[in-house]
Structure formats: structure tokens, C-alpha cells
Length: 90
Image 1: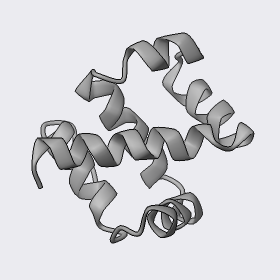
Image 2: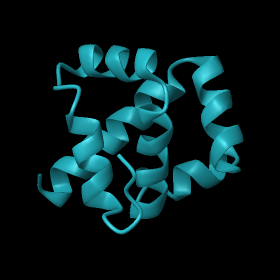
Image 3: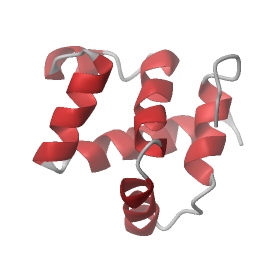
């Protein structure tokens, strides 16, 4: 997976999580960021990898995300690995 593809999937996951109030609250809580910091950090691969890690922790959200964006369920894990190869547990 290319870096561009990984970043696209990560940005799609941010949009997906932000579209639901509970998911957005979880995302902000688990990252320790406020909404403004999240927005300014979207160019940071570590933040994008962190968002994907959060998505990967909840199978129901992961599958809903993949269905919404018509991507394979393995793609978010591959994107996470591409963005954070030294920290990848997935």
C-alpha cells in the first residue's frame, strides 16, 4: 500500500468517526486531543496512525467503516502499518 493510499484511508476514517457524535467523543478521549488539535494534526502520520488504531479496536465500527467506503476489511490495518510501521500491533 502506498503512503498516499494509507493517508486517504486514515482521513476517511477520521471523517467516518467524526460523523457520529459518540465515535467522535471516543476518538477525542482516546487520543487526548481536542477537535482543533485533531484538525491541525491531520497531516501528521502519527495522529493518522492513532486514529486507525482506534478504529481497529472496535470490529463493529471497523466493518461499518469498510462498508461505508467500500474497502476491504484488511485495508485499515495495512494503512496503519504503512503509517506507523515501527509501532504496529495490527
